[in-house]
Length: 190
Image (cartoon, rainbow, N blue to C red; front, side, top):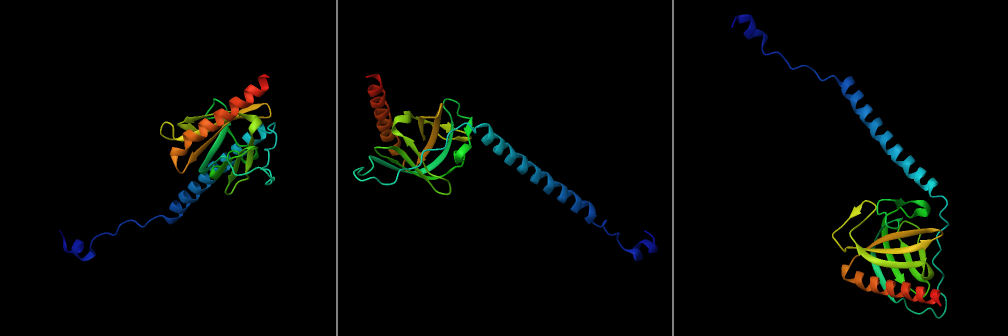
C-alpha cells in the first residue's frame, strides 16, 4: 500500500437513498389499503346479492308465563351459511359478523344475543335440525366442536354455527333441537 492510501482511510459505505425507500413504503401502504378496500367492497356486494333475505326476527320481549329457558349456552357465534354449503357465508342483516354470543332455548325458539352485533331469534317453527360439525365459513375446528343449527328463513335453508365455552353442552343442544324439530314435523303431518 502506498502512503496516500493509508492517509485517505477506508471508504465509507454508500448512503441510503431515502427517497426510494419512502417511495416503496408508500407504494406498499397504498397496495394494502387497496386490498382492504376491495375486500370491503366484496363484502358489501355479497350483502347486496343476499338482499332478498327477509329481516331477522327480533328476540321477543319477556312475555309472562314463558318461564326459564330450557337450555342456555355461552360461547361464540361463527357465522351463518346456506345449508349444506359450509363456505357460502351469509352476510346480510349482520349474519356474517362473528361475535361472542349467548343462546337460550325458549318456547319461542333459539334466542341469539350477540355482543357487538344485533341479536336475533331462530323461531321454533323454523328449526329444521341440529348437528355437531367441524367447520363453517372459514372456521375449522376439531370434529364435533361446532354446534350447527339448521333453520328456515324466508325461502332459504340456513346453517348457523356456534361454539360453546363448554363443549360438553353441545350434545344436549343437538338432542333438544332435534326433538323440537321432530315435534314440529309431527304436528305438521297431522
